[in-house]
Length: 471
Image (tube, rainbow, N blue to C red; front, side):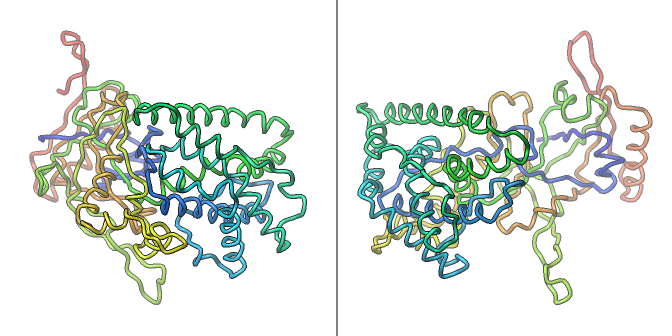
C-alpha cells in the first residue's frame, strides 16, 4: 500500500494539541469514536450445566455487591456502578460479605423453581444471545434480589422497609417453554427466541419513562434511579458488564483512510474542509500488512520515590488493519473466551461447580491452548475492525492497540516516525496562515533530518469530473 491518510483539524495539528510539531497520534478509546457499535461483539452463551450454574452464581455475587453499593451510595447523586465482573467470593472484603453471598446462592439453588434451571438451559439446544440471556435473568432477578435482601436485613444492613413487596418474577416454566418452543429447526428456534427477547427488552426499556414520571425534580429523579437500577435494570447492566469485562481487554485505536477524496469525511474529520490530511507511507509488517513505526507506552517502571510507576516508552511496529464493513458482528462464545480472568480463578469460579464437576469446556481449551489463544486475539481484532456497512465509504484502516495491563489509559499519545510521513494535503477551505504554519513546521523538521522528498498538495473540486481531486 502506497499511502494512508489521517484527516485532522488545524486545531489538532497546530494550536490546541500540536500534533504535527510533536509528531503525535492520539490513541482513542472506542467510546470516543463516532460509531456507538465500535467493538461490538455478538456474544452468545452455550454451555453445560456447570457453566450455567456458575453464571447464575456469579449473578448472585454481582447482585450482592450492587445491592450493598446502592445502600451506601448517595441517593441524590446516584449513578449506576460498573458491574463487578472480575469479583470472586474469596475477594469479598469481609467474612460477613462472603456469608451473605454464599447463603443467598445456597437459598437460590435450593428453590425448587430454579434448582433445575442450569440443566434446563444446557439442554435447550440453542445458544442464547444478549437479549435472550437478559430475558432469563429477568425471570429470576426479583427472586434473587429478595434472597439477597433477606440476608442483608438479617444482619441489620438493610432498612426493614427497603425493597418491600417485591414480586417473584416470571415463572420459570413459562420461560423454559418460550426457550424450547415448538420449532424443530435450531436456527429458526434461535431466531424466534431472540426476536421474543428483543421485543421483551424493548417493552421493558420503554417502561422507564413511566417509572420516572413521578420524579418532580433532579433529586427525586436520582433517588428513583437507584431503585430502578437495582429492581429492574440490573439484568441489562449485568449482561453488558460481563460481555465487556470478562472476554477481551480494553483497546485503543487510531483511524486512517485509503482515500482523501471523500467530501463528507473532510467535513466530519477535518473541520469542514479547513483541516489537512497527513499522508503516511506504511511499511509491511512480518505478514506483509501495512504498518507504522510508533513510540508508545510499553511498560511501567517503579521506584521508592514513585511507587505508582512511571511510563516506559518503546518502539513498536503497529499493524494497520483494514476495517471490515458488515452488518454482522463477530460471534464470540462467552464461556469459551473468559480471557480476562487469571486461569486459577477461571477454573475455580467458572469451570468447576459446587460439587467439583469440571466443565468439558476446560478440557477443550487445554487440548490446544495455542489455538485457543490465537482465536482469542483474532476475535478481538475482528471486533475492533468491524463496522456497519453504513461506513463503507470511509475505506478505513486502523491501528488496534490492546491494553491488557491498563497501561495505555492516560498515556494515549503515540509518536510517529517522521520518515514515514510522505506529505500533507490541505483541505479546500484551509486558511492561508494555517497552511504557512504547517509548512514552516515541516520545513524545520526536514532541514534537521536532511529530507527533501516531503510534498504538499491541495484539495480542489474539478467540475469536469464532478469530484474532489488532489493537486
